[in-house]
Length: 281
Image 1 (spheres, helix red, strand yellow):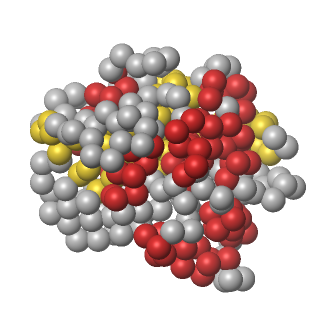
Image 2 (cartoon, rainbow, N blue to C red):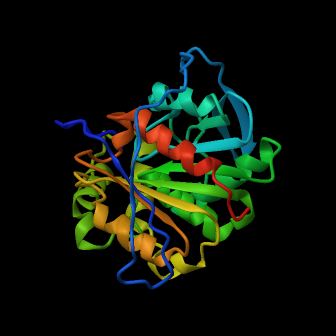
Protein backbone atom coordinates (compact mmCIF):
# COMPACT_ATOMS: atom_id res chain seq x y z
CA UNK A 1 0.00 0.00 0.00
CA UNK A 2 1.46 3.41 -0.95
CA UNK A 3 0.97 6.01 1.82
CA UNK A 4 1.78 9.66 1.11
CA UNK A 5 2.79 11.75 4.09
CA UNK A 6 5.06 14.58 5.15
CA UNK A 7 8.48 13.38 6.12
CA UNK A 8 11.97 14.46 7.14
CA UNK A 9 14.82 12.52 5.58
CA UNK A 10 17.36 11.54 8.20
CA UNK A 11 20.12 8.98 8.41
CA UNK A 12 18.42 5.65 9.07
CA UNK A 13 19.60 3.45 11.86
CA UNK A 14 20.36 -0.13 10.90
CA UNK A 15 19.66 -2.06 14.05
CA UNK A 16 21.02 -5.55 13.76
CA UNK A 17 19.10 -7.47 16.37
CA UNK A 18 19.86 -11.17 16.49
CA UNK A 19 17.07 -12.57 18.62
CA UNK A 20 16.59 -15.85 20.33
CA UNK A 21 12.97 -16.98 20.15
CA UNK A 22 11.09 -15.67 23.15
CA UNK A 23 13.79 -13.14 24.01
CA UNK A 24 12.30 -10.22 25.94
CA UNK A 25 15.22 -7.81 26.16
CA UNK A 26 17.67 -8.41 23.30
CA UNK A 27 20.86 -6.44 22.93
CA UNK A 28 21.21 -4.20 19.88
CA UNK A 29 23.80 -2.30 17.92
CA UNK A 30 23.27 0.54 15.46
CA UNK A 31 25.04 1.03 12.17
CA UNK A 32 24.66 4.22 10.16
CA UNK A 33 24.78 3.73 6.39
CA UNK A 34 25.57 6.36 3.81
CA UNK A 35 23.58 6.79 0.59
CA UNK A 36 24.43 4.27 -2.11
CA UNK A 37 27.63 4.61 -4.11
CA UNK A 38 26.37 2.01 -6.58
CA UNK A 39 25.80 3.44 -10.06
CA UNK A 40 22.11 3.15 -10.89
CA UNK A 41 21.31 2.33 -14.50
CA UNK A 42 17.86 3.79 -15.13
CA UNK A 43 15.17 1.30 -16.04
CA UNK A 44 11.51 1.54 -16.88
CA UNK A 45 8.99 -0.96 -15.57
CA UNK A 46 6.34 -0.04 -18.11
CA UNK A 47 8.79 -0.33 -21.01
CA UNK A 48 9.82 -3.82 -19.91
CA UNK A 49 7.83 -6.59 -21.64
CA UNK A 50 5.19 -8.39 -19.62
CA UNK A 51 5.48 -12.17 -19.56
CA UNK A 52 3.02 -14.75 -18.27
CA UNK A 53 3.18 -17.96 -16.25
CA UNK A 54 0.28 -20.38 -15.72
CA UNK A 55 0.04 -21.11 -11.98
CA UNK A 56 -2.78 -22.63 -9.88
CA UNK A 57 -5.47 -22.06 -12.48
CA UNK A 58 -4.52 -18.45 -13.17
CA UNK A 59 -2.18 -16.68 -15.56
CA UNK A 60 0.20 -14.48 -13.55
CA UNK A 61 1.77 -11.50 -15.27
CA UNK A 62 5.41 -10.83 -14.44
CA UNK A 63 8.46 -8.85 -15.50
CA UNK A 64 12.15 -9.60 -14.93
CA UNK A 65 15.21 -7.40 -14.55
CA UNK A 66 18.95 -7.81 -14.03
CA UNK A 67 20.90 -10.98 -13.39
CA UNK A 68 22.36 -13.08 -10.59
CA UNK A 69 20.59 -14.85 -7.75
CA UNK A 70 16.79 -14.60 -8.05
CA UNK A 71 14.78 -12.13 -5.97
CA UNK A 72 10.97 -12.13 -5.96
CA UNK A 73 9.28 -8.86 -5.00
CA UNK A 74 5.76 -9.21 -3.54
CA UNK A 75 3.67 -6.02 -3.54
CA UNK A 76 1.03 -4.95 -1.04
CA UNK A 77 -2.71 -4.33 -0.94
CA UNK A 78 -4.03 -2.69 -4.09
CA UNK A 79 -0.61 -2.44 -5.73
CA UNK A 80 0.64 -3.84 -9.02
CA UNK A 81 4.13 -4.36 -10.34
CA UNK A 82 3.81 -1.06 -12.25
CA UNK A 83 3.98 0.77 -8.92
CA UNK A 84 7.25 -0.68 -7.62
CA UNK A 85 9.81 2.06 -6.97
CA UNK A 86 12.12 2.13 -9.98
CA UNK A 87 15.11 3.54 -8.07
CA UNK A 88 15.10 0.66 -5.59
CA UNK A 89 14.39 -1.79 -8.39
CA UNK A 90 17.38 -0.55 -10.39
CA UNK A 91 19.66 -1.03 -7.38
CA UNK A 92 18.35 -4.55 -6.80
CA UNK A 93 18.67 -5.39 -10.50
CA UNK A 94 22.32 -4.34 -10.50
CA UNK A 95 23.03 -7.32 -8.22
CA UNK A 96 20.12 -9.76 -8.56
CA UNK A 97 17.73 -11.27 -11.09
CA UNK A 98 14.58 -9.50 -9.93
CA UNK A 99 11.06 -10.69 -10.66
CA UNK A 100 7.94 -8.56 -10.19
CA UNK A 101 4.43 -9.94 -10.63
CA UNK A 102 0.76 -9.04 -10.24
CA UNK A 103 -1.35 -10.99 -7.75
CA UNK A 104 -4.26 -12.96 -9.16
CA UNK A 105 -7.09 -10.59 -10.08
CA UNK A 106 -4.79 -7.56 -10.08
CA UNK A 107 -3.07 -5.68 -12.88
CA UNK A 108 -2.52 -7.95 -15.86
CA UNK A 109 -3.00 -11.26 -14.05
CA UNK A 110 -6.19 -13.28 -14.48
CA UNK A 111 -8.77 -13.83 -11.75
CA UNK A 112 -9.23 -17.57 -11.27
CA UNK A 113 -12.12 -19.47 -9.68
CA UNK A 114 -10.87 -19.97 -6.12
CA UNK A 115 -11.64 -17.56 -3.29
CA UNK A 116 -8.35 -15.76 -2.63
CA UNK A 117 -6.79 -16.23 0.79
CA UNK A 118 -3.38 -15.32 2.14
CA UNK A 119 -2.40 -18.97 1.90
CA UNK A 120 -3.53 -19.11 -1.74
CA UNK A 121 -1.59 -15.94 -2.61
CA UNK A 122 1.44 -17.57 -0.98
CA UNK A 123 0.94 -20.76 -2.97
CA UNK A 124 0.73 -18.68 -6.15
CA UNK A 125 4.07 -17.06 -5.34
CA UNK A 126 5.73 -20.35 -4.43
CA UNK A 127 4.46 -22.05 -7.58
CA UNK A 128 5.49 -19.05 -9.69
CA UNK A 129 9.05 -19.62 -8.50
CA UNK A 130 8.88 -23.20 -9.78
CA UNK A 131 7.22 -22.12 -13.04
CA UNK A 132 10.12 -19.73 -13.64
CA UNK A 133 12.55 -22.62 -13.34
CA UNK A 134 13.89 -22.06 -9.83
CA UNK A 135 13.84 -24.18 -6.71
CA UNK A 136 13.87 -21.10 -4.48
CA UNK A 137 14.33 -17.32 -4.45
CA UNK A 138 15.07 -14.51 -2.05
CA UNK A 139 11.82 -12.79 -1.10
CA UNK A 140 11.04 -9.11 -0.51
CA UNK A 141 7.45 -8.56 0.65
CA UNK A 142 5.92 -5.22 1.57
CA UNK A 143 2.81 -4.78 3.75
CA UNK A 144 0.33 -7.43 2.55
CA UNK A 145 3.22 -8.80 0.52
CA UNK A 146 5.01 -9.50 3.80
CA UNK A 147 1.97 -11.44 5.07
CA UNK A 148 2.18 -13.55 1.92
CA UNK A 149 5.93 -14.01 2.41
CA UNK A 150 5.41 -15.31 5.95
CA UNK A 151 2.93 -17.90 4.71
CA UNK A 152 5.43 -18.94 2.04
CA UNK A 153 8.19 -19.42 4.60
CA UNK A 154 5.87 -21.48 6.80
CA UNK A 155 4.06 -23.56 4.16
CA UNK A 156 6.72 -23.91 1.46
CA UNK A 157 10.03 -23.22 3.25
CA UNK A 158 12.06 -24.84 0.50
CA UNK A 159 11.04 -22.04 -1.89
CA UNK A 160 12.42 -19.27 0.32
CA UNK A 161 16.08 -18.30 0.61
CA UNK A 162 16.48 -15.02 2.53
CA UNK A 163 13.36 -13.05 3.33
CA UNK A 164 12.78 -9.33 3.89
CA UNK A 165 9.52 -8.34 5.60
CA UNK A 166 8.85 -4.64 5.00
CA UNK A 167 6.11 -2.87 7.01
CA UNK A 168 4.84 -6.16 8.38
CA UNK A 169 2.47 -7.62 10.94
CA UNK A 170 1.67 -11.03 12.34
CA UNK A 171 -2.11 -10.45 12.56
CA UNK A 172 -4.87 -8.17 11.33
CA UNK A 173 -6.92 -8.75 14.50
CA UNK A 174 -4.87 -6.80 17.02
CA UNK A 175 -5.49 -3.22 18.21
CA UNK A 176 -2.38 -1.84 16.50
CA UNK A 177 -3.79 -2.92 13.13
CA UNK A 178 -7.08 -1.06 13.44
CA UNK A 179 -6.23 1.41 10.68
CA UNK A 180 -5.62 -1.27 8.09
CA UNK A 181 -8.54 -3.33 9.39
CA UNK A 182 -10.92 -0.39 8.95
CA UNK A 183 -9.54 0.38 5.50
CA UNK A 184 -9.92 -3.23 4.37
CA UNK A 185 -13.49 -3.31 5.64
CA UNK A 186 -14.28 -0.15 3.68
CA UNK A 187 -12.98 -1.77 0.49
CA UNK A 188 -14.99 -4.95 0.98
CA UNK A 189 -18.20 -2.98 1.57
CA UNK A 190 -17.68 -0.74 -1.48
CA UNK A 191 -19.47 -2.24 -4.49
CA UNK A 192 -17.57 0.14 -6.77
CA UNK A 193 -14.18 -1.22 -5.72
CA UNK A 194 -12.46 -3.46 -8.29
CA UNK A 195 -13.03 -7.15 -7.61
CA UNK A 196 -9.32 -7.93 -7.34
CA UNK A 197 -8.90 -5.25 -4.68
CA UNK A 198 -11.95 -6.49 -2.79
CA UNK A 199 -10.54 -10.02 -2.91
CA UNK A 200 -7.25 -8.84 -1.41
CA UNK A 201 -9.03 -6.91 1.34
CA UNK A 202 -11.24 -9.91 2.13
CA UNK A 203 -8.16 -12.15 2.34
CA UNK A 204 -6.53 -9.75 4.79
CA UNK A 205 -9.63 -9.67 7.00
CA UNK A 206 -9.89 -13.48 6.96
CA UNK A 207 -6.19 -14.05 7.65
CA UNK A 208 -5.56 -16.02 10.86
CA UNK A 209 -2.10 -14.55 11.25
CA UNK A 210 1.22 -16.17 12.12
CA UNK A 211 1.95 -15.24 15.74
CA UNK A 212 1.83 -18.81 17.05
CA UNK A 213 3.89 -20.06 14.09
CA UNK A 214 6.60 -17.42 13.75
CA UNK A 215 9.06 -19.52 15.76
CA UNK A 216 8.82 -22.16 13.01
CA UNK A 217 10.38 -19.87 10.39
CA UNK A 218 13.83 -21.26 9.71
CA UNK A 219 15.38 -18.91 7.20
CA UNK A 220 17.29 -15.63 7.36
CA UNK A 221 14.81 -12.82 7.98
CA UNK A 222 15.17 -9.06 8.05
CA UNK A 223 12.26 -6.93 9.25
CA UNK A 224 12.13 -3.36 7.96
CA UNK A 225 9.83 -0.61 9.26
CA UNK A 226 9.59 3.16 9.57
CA UNK A 227 9.18 4.67 13.02
CA UNK A 228 6.27 6.80 11.75
CA UNK A 229 4.37 3.84 10.31
CA UNK A 230 0.76 4.04 11.52
CA UNK A 231 -0.49 1.19 9.31
CA UNK A 232 1.84 -1.51 10.65
CA UNK A 233 3.52 0.20 13.64
CA UNK A 234 7.16 -0.61 14.33
CA UNK A 235 6.35 -2.33 17.62
CA UNK A 236 4.85 -5.18 15.59
CA UNK A 237 8.10 -5.81 13.73
CA UNK A 238 9.95 -5.73 17.06
CA UNK A 239 7.62 -8.38 18.46
CA UNK A 240 8.06 -10.51 15.35
CA UNK A 241 11.83 -10.26 15.58
CA UNK A 242 11.59 -11.59 19.11
CA UNK A 243 9.80 -14.68 17.81
CA UNK A 244 11.90 -15.41 14.70
CA UNK A 245 15.20 -16.92 15.70
CA UNK A 246 18.23 -15.03 14.38
CA UNK A 247 16.18 -12.31 12.68
CA UNK A 248 17.28 -8.73 12.04
CA UNK A 249 15.22 -5.62 12.76
CA UNK A 250 15.73 -2.34 10.91
CA UNK A 251 13.96 0.84 12.03
CA UNK A 252 14.13 3.87 9.74
CA UNK A 253 13.73 7.10 11.69
CA UNK A 254 10.75 9.29 10.77
CA UNK A 255 9.71 7.23 7.75
CA UNK A 256 6.14 6.03 7.13
CA UNK A 257 4.53 2.80 6.01
CA UNK A 258 6.34 1.35 2.99
CA UNK A 259 9.08 3.90 3.56
CA UNK A 260 11.07 2.62 0.61
CA UNK A 261 8.84 4.79 -1.58
CA UNK A 262 10.19 7.80 0.32
CA UNK A 263 13.83 6.80 0.70
CA UNK A 264 14.42 4.03 -1.85
CA UNK A 265 18.21 4.24 -1.96
CA UNK A 266 18.70 3.67 1.77
CA UNK A 267 16.09 0.91 1.86
CA UNK A 268 17.69 -0.84 -1.12
CA UNK A 269 21.21 -0.43 0.26
CA UNK A 270 20.26 -2.05 3.55
CA UNK A 271 18.44 -4.87 1.77
CA UNK A 272 21.50 -5.53 -0.42
CA UNK A 273 23.73 -5.52 2.66
CA UNK A 274 21.53 -8.17 4.27
CA UNK A 275 21.17 -10.30 1.15
CA UNK A 276 24.93 -10.46 0.59
CA UNK A 277 25.71 -11.65 4.11
CA UNK A 278 26.37 -15.38 4.65
CA UNK A 279 23.13 -17.10 5.51
CA UNK A 280 21.55 -20.36 6.58
CA UNK A 281 20.73 -21.46 3.02
